[in-house]
Image (tube, rainbow, N blue to C red):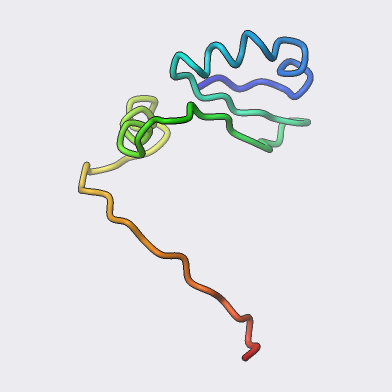
Length: 78
């Protein structure tokens, strides 16, 4: 995982996109606040989870990932 500023990304977009194609994850920050992540397309969720575990970002026991459906929240409105 690489952390870069918006200005750095703009100045070297082609090079950073090549790194993403090779599997790298970019974390984009503006004034030290993370605003976005760019992750490789086409990687399975399990492969992304494995990579985050390897980098120490998350801890995961390896249980199968289930599908889920989003739920609607009505905020007290009917």
